Length: 156
Ligand code: ZN
Image (tube, rainbow, N blue to C red; front, side):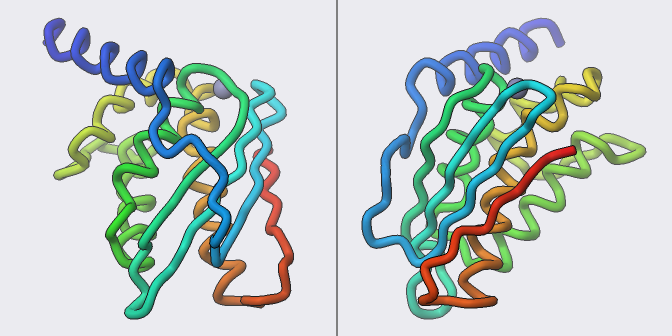
């Protein structure tokens, strides 16, 4: 178990130091901003949804703690190429891994690196901020695509 824990630490540090998809998406179809005042984490997420509802591209920018940055980076890798529904399902299972009663997390792949966060409730908001912001970016498209509005998510 301690080996696994070290591996998870490595994944988190790697994604914190070299965040993936850390860029501005110019041709995004949806955009969300999120803020976690408890920790000061800020994140902006862009998505590009193609035909068939597939997330063709996703990117983020922001400033925050290691957990929030690593989680956002891991999230972009996890949802790219998935449909909107699959991404929402992943979010639900990710959240259940961190806050659910049993802590079960089937087939979450690299996202399981963040499983240890459930032992630190205050950190759960850091880990889920990017996902809530993704959700806002996806919802905005459905609600008022083309209006250019950005959905803001304030964690409380
Ligand atoms: Zn944080």
